[in-house]
Image (cartoon, rainbow, N blue to C red; front, side, top):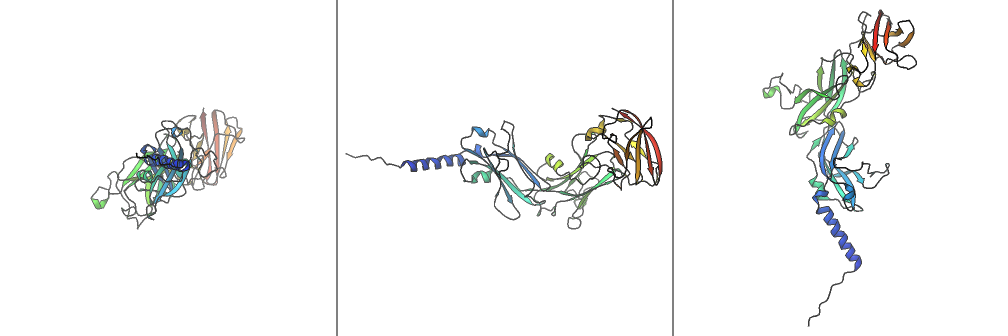
Length: 391
């Protein structure tokens, strides 16, 4: 007779083995638990990564959170942890603060970094999920979720407003050739007519391969009319078809030669602010230089109508143009009462022929509709006129 002996395993060892099996199953057995990266936007010293699990995290047993990884390709480094989001961490001062809204079927988790990336350098990014209370890194997901090389930039160096135009200068901080920037396709210059439309529109595209050496016509769409980078690292776009006195925004983005998609997120991110003019400091107003006489002074728009295209920039105002510098502007009612006095201390650019008025009196109150008289005094002469305000 054979005696059958049962192997005995101590309860603590059983629990440990079960925990290991559960962890391995969670980490390695569920591709569904590898977050799916939906997009990566790399802009001017800035990256935004969006991802989703496709399900509500609250329905996943032992869900611990997410880890965002970044790799600097040029330095040949391995992935490094950029940010951890721990499920249930509600302290906004904590380094692993969850910070996301409740999940729904359309929700995308978003990571933004404006500190760690350098313009013109290639990076790779990845996002993984982890088990609550576990330090184990899901290396399979880390590699599976890794993006191809992506690069940051460009950076706008200057925006110079001119008479009916603008000059925009930018660079990538590195040469655009294939060795320095992988898959570099070219640049797109964007203009937003703040007073006429909601979003940026494409003003000019520069395609890296479209150049004179390749036999392309210099008037062709996308023509790359820049010198080699080592000669002039600042790229320049010039436009002389804008309207003086109207607000604009400008942006420059780069694109991948393998992807035709427009990176809409970078259009606003790359819209650098250099203006010190009236209204939103992100707006630029094309203008002439100061005038030598008072003969060309006028007010635009005249008549002023509230709610017209002019106001889509979010600002009620009229603009005095054709001004010498300095100049003192006085606005009166038709009965002769002084409404407001404007001088060079009221937001006037000494290199501009323009001065805005926000349609408020000296007490900061909005004026009533009607006809107003304006008078300008300057060392170059004096001028008087009328304006009509319709609300």
